[in-house]
Image (tube, rainbow, N blue to C red):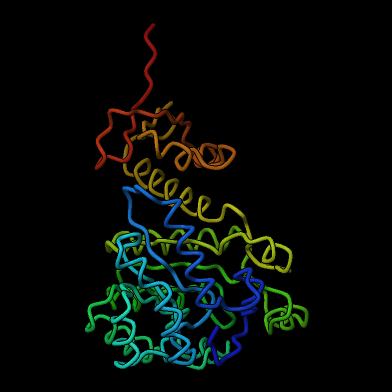
Length: 327
């Protein structure tokens, strides 16, 4: 919706699962139904316009959609409105319009901060555009979100990490991390079939995204999404790349096992039988899918068993202890 460019990776219909943008009546109907379901909520809730570049549509169309949603913010049904857009589709006039209709968060599809990668993938904007738009959004008092892709054509691990550093320097309130998928009908699909593009494997993407997740978390930047929503249309149209329905869970599990290994390697734990205690909500991430973290640590020389412990303080994510047998 609204995007004037055709990026190498983009087939928005298959990615978002939507064919046409909603009408104002449809927006109001959707908001009304959601408000009824969330009646009495005790958690934050927003209305979101995603699936394209919202601020690149005609101003009157944008205004009509916002007018349909805004009453549900004014009556307290929702806390605000969140929109996603391109870095080169932001200016003071657009931000003033968004502000007038209850928009609280603007997310930019930065994707990369490497100009060569951006050009190669037909993005139509530069890293400077991301920096400029981020500054305008911040100055206008909005929350800033930045979206980053992993594994784009022309990107290396080094340039990916540099993108993360440049994104962190913009001090976003939140970040989304998306592995690059090869979707039917895109330039990427053509390049893939020609042999000029090799996507990351699931393992490669999970390892790199785990590094990125930890990098942002260490800087108190919240990662609110990892991987695209597993829409049926996306699963059917994805012909290659690191698609996994539980990709986010896999990444969080990698972060856990990396932290555990660092702690084990820093102490005198090699060759000993160990118990690792974690807070109950973290148990599945610590153990890993199909207990893969336990097997992975065993291959590194650490025989561990992982148990939940509800008495662990929140600031203490895990505790390692040696299992000693009395004779």
